[in-house]
Amino acid sequence: MMPFQAYTSYLSLKNHFTKEKYDYHKYAGKTRATIKAFYNRRDRYFFEKLSRQKDDKQVVEFFVSNFISCTDPQSLWIGDIIKNGESVYTDWQKRMQSLTYFFKEEVTKLFEENKFDDVLKVESNRHPILVKKYIQKEVSIETLVILDKILLYKRDYDKKLNDPVWQLISMRIDKYSSFLNLDIFKYRKILKEIILESK
Image (cartoon, rainbow, N blue to C red; front, side):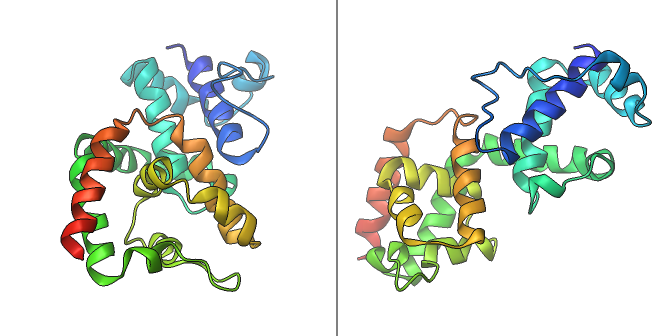
């Protein structure tokens, strides 16, 4: 990957995770960035270094992991990525390699402490337990995505929860799910076993 391509990957993935109408996959990562603008940037050495160290797929994963791990992708500054990006990427890679294990652990704890219906229930525009556990970092964004693919809870939440915190999480689930290659049948089986054991 050339340094300019690393830069356009950063821009297009930032757009993907912050703009509702922009889809990285649909637009094949295209942006309006120019080479001139790139060479005027003070931080271009970072993109040059990144393009030497990582292949095309790894550069995309690097930025996806950083945008998905921060509190607000809109305010994620390139300086933070330069400083902490590598450790965030390493943590994300570990999570991806053991995603089944992490899912099992998080969901087991979730349903040991709460009844299945209570976890998902929305009461008078208050966040359900599932969303609270995500905010408290007890449930990962990957688990939210997997559970939505199995249970389709997000559509219901989108109708019932009218607050900026949920809107941000909802958009994050939508935007991230296209980057996760999941065997939903396997996760459905795991979830079923956990729910039966917790009864």
